[in-house]
Length: 125
Image 1 (cartoon, helix red, strand yellow):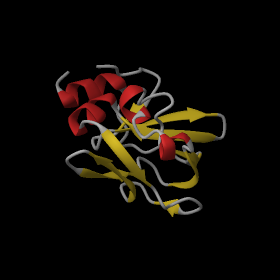
Image 2 (tube, one colour):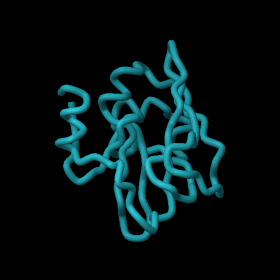
Image 3 (cartoon, helix red, strand yellow):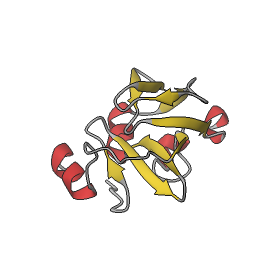
């Protein structure tokens, strides 16, 4: 499994990548493997501030639906436009083209975010 060191992770298996004045959020390689083939991503929180730990959408796999939890309090700026046509990007490239949302840069980083090393210990990889 892949755990990029430059990302921060949550216990709920989301990742955060900060770039300039915004951040990208997606699910981890571990999460997408556990869910199986992703067939649909449903996010209806664009333009909304979502509190840390609150649900910002769902991801549907062949046999289950899983909630997506916001790693930091932030406003959802946009969805990944590619996911409508190609939700399988979450499986094939979870840290790149398979990102879920772009959010405003949080004013204060969550103390609950994990380093790659801490996340690896959490999932036992």
